[in-house]
Image (cartoon, rainbow, N blue to C red; front, side, top):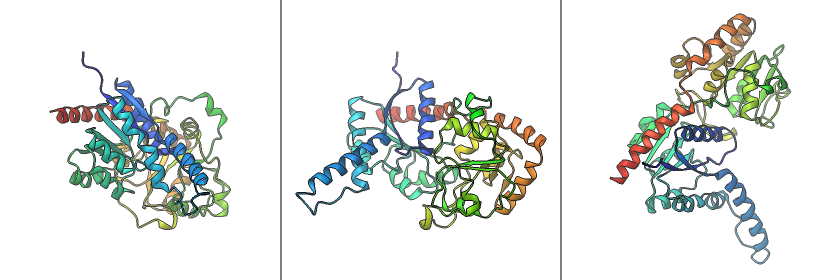
Length: 362
């Protein structure tokens, strides 16, 4: 009997959003019988950072001009163990999620060692330049943004589009025991405070609306009114799902620029749904969304869209007054994304990996 595919699955290194992608993909591959060897880059980054700085402080007493470890030093030290682990476990393929925090030298050495290396890119189109440079080094890859596929194929013919998905054990319609422990907001948003989002929330008068704003927002320029509506900084999927189910309106805002804060650049073009779009729908949560082409393609007219804060403010007040309408829409949303689970996405990934391994072996 042929043994299952053995995959070294490299964690993205980040703690939240991309970590959820890795968790979903790992779940899907596990359900499909893939033998997974996990490499926790997040834990290794923390350990490498502490270790290198402790050693630097110790050594600089005798060598005052000793250079302080930089980010590249930490990322290399954190990631190099993936090469050793892949060789020790004799994996069929290395699958890196995101790769934004994976030192490129590690990937180069993996290729020199004869390993088959693939990447699921999660930050298109915001970090496409860095992603495309990595895509050119590996054997195959997927991007989360369909409008970027042509650019990826130009540097790697084994590039494809893998839409985001939802985790069926984390996002679902039925109420959970934790639901009663979270507040019911008029409007809820869970996400990070990118500059365009700060501007968006500051542009709306939230008087009379109970907004629940969750995520990292402190010190990023919110006005006094919105700042008073910021709740917990970091919440897990279970709490986020409970907030979605209990809120009258969920919000789905997209990033529209590269980089953070003052470094943010001009607006970018994108078409694909974010993980939040699938998660809100899977939870049966009525929501409003910034416009993207896939919103209408997937949800039809069930998810009202807006392009400006003024349009959004009008939609929020309109739908807050329509309880029956919200309930009708919410009941229809889960069916729109019923097949968009991480198990379904993992089937695509597994099929591509099996074909790639077969070609490489030949």
